[in-house]
Length: 235
View 1 (cartoon, rainbow, N blue to C red):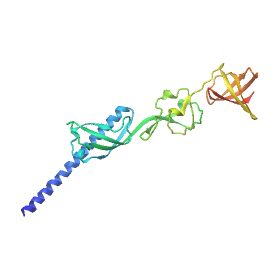
View 2 (tube, rainbow, N blue to C red):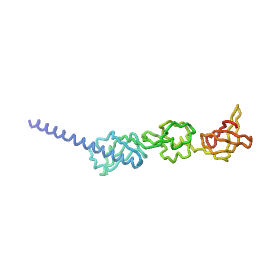
View 3 (cartoon, rainbow, N blue to C red):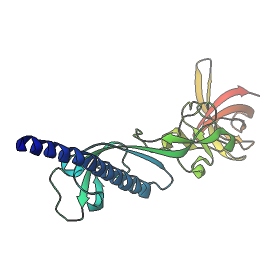
View 4 (tube, rainbow, N blue to C red):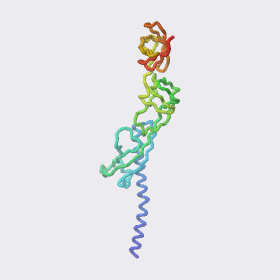
């Protein structure tokens, strides 16, 4: 009878411990998530950060949230996606398995194409919209400063809603009236370069009037870049 009573007491005691342990594990998970979000925000103050605690070691789960001093990500730089995280305790004695697996989503307000932009298009304010984008899986750093677009043209086709990367943009290739340029002439199998003088100021992607003293003719040409001007027609 005594054995039966003792067993009932043990079962009841263990049952009472379960909520306490669950609460402790939940508390330390929340502490880790808070520290992780704060750490990411220090790297990117303008970002929106979401942290999920996917796994913590059993050793950590038993610890009090107040015992946690800081966390350290396994890789330098802005963390995103699945990130192995080391937990550092205030006591200075860290168990060998003081690890957690986090999933971090980072969203940032970035410029995107307001409409489809063809290769060689000049960028204007009306061509850009600002949207919150998930940058967790990006392998390249997108353009984030509106000043970067000043006097720039696209180097490839940009679809509506796409981010801009530095390689997508090049100098405007502006040619001013009076500038001496070389035009590439191609017609009927004839391909030659003709030295010309610009009669007006135009940018890459636009057509420009050129005059050649060598041929005494006026031409219409298209500016691909400052060093690439293609003949369109002879006036």
